[in-house]
Length: 335
Image 1 (tube, rainbow, N blue to C red):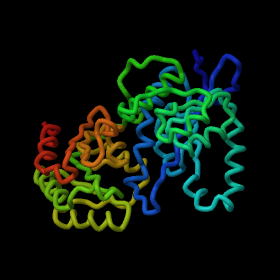
Image 2 (image 1 turned 90 degrees about the horizontal axis):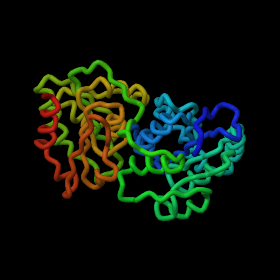
Image 3 (image 1 turned 90 degrees about the vertical axis):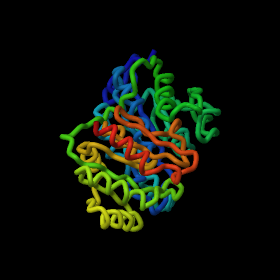
Image 4 (image 1 turned 180 degrees about the vertical axis):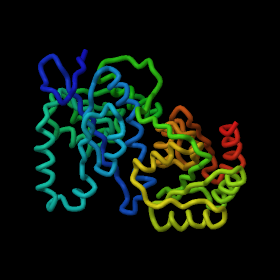
């Protein structure tokens, strides 16, 4: 049994420290804010909450673009930014920064480092840590199987589980505790709800894109019920689409915001509707009534989850999701 302790305290033989590694995700150069809060940073949050509830205080190693969300969890003692996206552009010119990062990371001796991503790059990062034990998924459970050979402790977690459940089961198995409570992201925030609706339309996946005309129709319906409709964007294409929706519906196109600012705006909304993208997961995690639209991806494996989250799936892709089906869900929320 691992005895919980604060990871910033001096580590003794009877105490334990814990580092969690979240891999720097493969992000396209034209990444948008809608995708930068990829589910990789939101999905582990309940597992972090589980460990914190048992007395563990966690250091979280995470791609620098995601650190703002990781820092929102009150149980995360320290967020350790990793600049993998910048480093990989030129490993030679980044060599000095990488060495400095490694030495800084090794200033703290961890009893345990958990690679919650199961990728080769996250496994390599875990090796950089000064931890007695490296743990992660076993060969059949990891997303990149070969990485399991880098771990001292390997855990079998069924692939058919939802991603959040996989993370929670990994952490509970490594830290030796039972899961009895419901998943809790730990970042729930509820502002004073306004008659405000968020449209999270942006995605770099063409197959996840919902027709602009349908967003327009939905925005018109929301406007007819007195909602202020807010639309985000992250690149020129998304801005053009957002402005097209707004021009026909009197919706509001938001300026660029930090992730924390967006999270607060989402918390003020009565409802958020989004495609399978990071901001939709964030909206669900903070407790906003969220409707996720799933066509090419499986909601049973990666669907947004939260106390007020629900999903609409279609075997016929995004074209199979009608405005009427989404509006029906929104009306139920308004009751």
